[in-house]
Each structure stands twice: as C-alpha cells, then as structure tokens.
Length: 339
Image 1: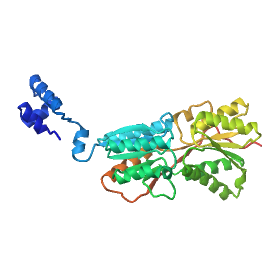
Image 2 (image 1 turned 90 degrees about the vertical axis):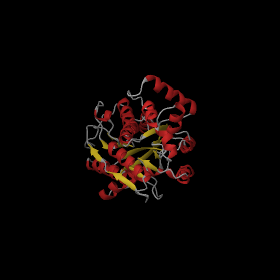
Image 3 (image 1 turned 30 degrees about the vertical axis):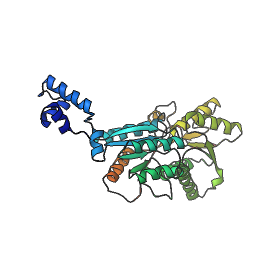
Image 4 (image 1 turned 120 degrees about the horizontal axis):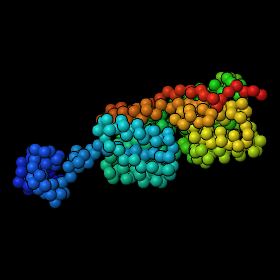
C-alpha cells in the first residue's frame, strides 16, 4: 500500500509538508501543494478514512439496512442514527430492502465486500428467515444489531420498543372505554414476532378483564401502508364486520382506516374508535387527532448505535434485546362506547 512517506519522497518534500499539502493547509505554497497532489494521484495514494481503515482493518463506516424509506417512522430512525453515528466519527451506507429477502441478502454481501465495521439491520422479515445472510456477517466477524425488531427464541443483539406492553396499554384503555369487539390490523409481510408480540399484549389485556378473545377480529393486510388500512376497513365493514374499535399496527394504517370510516359516513369516535401505533408527527394534526402508542425513536436509535459500537469494541458480546418503554398517547379518535 502506498504511504504518505512514499508520496513525500517522490515529490521531493518532507513527510510533514506532504501531509500539510494533502490537508490543504495554507502554510504550503500553491506550487508545492499542486506537485504533491499530482504525485499522490499518480501513485494511487488515497488519504481518506477508508484507505486508512483498510490498513488497520477499519473503515469507520456502518452499513444500514432499512425496509422502507417512504415510511416516516423509518425515516425518523435513519435521521437519528445518522446523527449519533456522526457524533462518534462514523459514516454510514444506507440501503433499502423493500421487504425483499433476496435484496436484503445482496445488500449484506455488498456490505461485506465494502468491509464495513458493523451493520444495523431493520429486517425485511423475521431475522430467522434470512439466517444464512446474517451468518455470513458472523463468519466475516462483522458485528450487527437488529433495530425495531427481534426474533423471539433466537439469540441476537437487538433494540426495540416493548411492543407487548404498548399494545397491552392501548387495549386496556379501549376496554376501559367499554369497547369489546376490536378489529386489529396487522401486516402479513412483517415479522411473525412483531405481530405475535402485539397480539400477546392484546390477549393479556383481555385476559385481565376476564373477556373472551374471540371478539377480536385480526385482519392481515398485504402491506402496512395507508391504502392497506383503508381497503381492509372498507372490505370488513362491507361484509358486515363492524367493530367497536380499530387498532392498527401503525399510524399510517390507522389514518387509512379513518378515511374509510368517513366515506362510510361513520363518526369517529362516536360510532367507531380508532387507534394507531408510533405517534408520527401528523397523528396529532390530522382532522381528528389520533390516539396512539409513542415509540421513542430517538432512544431506540441511540441505543442501537451504542450497542453496535460496543460490539465493535468487543464489549457486550452476550446476545440480548434492549427494550425501550412505550407511552400511551390519548387523543380525540377514541371515546366511550355509546351503544
């Protein structure tokens, strides 16, 4: 590998002068700087963090895999991760899997070739589903951390909201308002564990209230977006399945559900209460502000970055999941059952 000393000798200057020239210091005259840069270019010397990293098996670069950048929730996660990584003098490479396991696998292969120091993964599906790709990271000794999800029963490093507690708090609140028949909108292509954790919270609230679980209508949607929430509610109510309340896997689906109810001339919350999950910024400024569960994405992102950096430094080697506590946010889309 070409060193700064090699460049200095070839350019006929001291190593200190070559360093000043490469860093564009004003103490080096323009002619000398030009000569040093030309020699460096001709010799293939690259004075950046990646080149320095290759010499010490570090690149100060983190790979970040996200399922969907159009979802504001993930957009917030990306922003905070970027902020926290930069504070630690790390860059990151963002890649989007679009919930595609094959693409996720290809991204991981690319990260391995680029010699990233670590990887943060918001997986396309259950982490167990792409086990072989994650195993390649292990074989190449590249630390990784799952963010916003984990796979129950499979040991891994992960940071996420306590989804069970969040759905428990929300369900308990709805039951306290007198609602008994609740429609739960989930996404069929998200991780099995996430859906299970949320439903576990619902079941716990029903069990504590001594109520039968068979009054819950679980509706699987192809995606977890606005249109899916809208179509699911239109279909269910068109088939005569009118609930007391609707709980959606996220705020975006909840807003889609609210649109459907309005088009069906049903009042929110007088006829049907609606609640979401995430507490995205537009949830509080929609026509009818949305009751939801707040996920602290700043804390999730910070904990994710710290856990990964600890792993890179050889600390915190025992796989474990860090749970960030949720908060119930009560607004105007939910109310006391009137029938």
